[in-house]
Length: 251
Image (cartoon, rainbow, N blue to C red; front, side, top):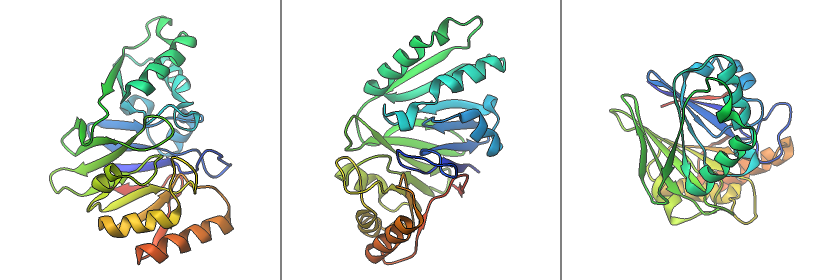
C-alpha cells in the first residue's frame, strides 16, 4: 500500500504551521517527492521519511513556492553519502531551469556527487511517469502562468485514485484527470489568472464525481478558511476539507 503525505499545503505565502505545497508518495519501492520547497530535510524528518528512501522527484512547474528547496535537498543527500541515482521528472520548461539552478550552486561538481537523471515529460494528457507494484502515476498539462502539470495517482491493482490539480485554472485536462477520483486535492489560491477559487473547486468536484474533496494551495487565515469551505460545499453538495500539513492520505 502507498500513502500520500502532504508536507505543505499553503499557497505562495506560508507560515509557521503551513509550508508551501509539496508532498511525498511513500510506497514499498521508495518515495516519490512531488515538488520541493523550504528546508525539505526538516519536514521530511517530521514526516518520518528518510532522505535515502527518495528515488524520484517530480517537479510540477518552475515557481519558487514549488522548487526552491531542490538545491538544499541535493546537498543534504550528498552530505549523507548518497550513492544511488535520483531521477527528476518534469516538463522541459521546468527541468531546463532546475538544471541551471543546480549548476549555479555547482552541485554536480562536488566530489563523489551522485548521478542525477533528468526525465523530460511531454505536454500531453495522461503521460505515465512511473508504474510500480503499488501505484501508477500519470501527468497532464494544466493552465497556469507557465507550463505546469497536474498529477493522477492510481493504486494497483484496485484503481483507487488521488488527483492533485497543482496550480491551474479550470480546464478540460483537469476535468478529465479528476473524473471519478476517490480524492481530489484541488488548489484554491483564489480568483486570479492561472488559479482556482474554492467555489470552482466545489463545482469541479461535483461534476467530476469525486468522492472526497480537499482544498490545497490556499491562502491562510481562519476566516478565509471557513469561507472557502462554505463556498466549496455549496457547489460540491457534500463536506469539504482543508488539507493540512503532514496529513496522510491512503492510496
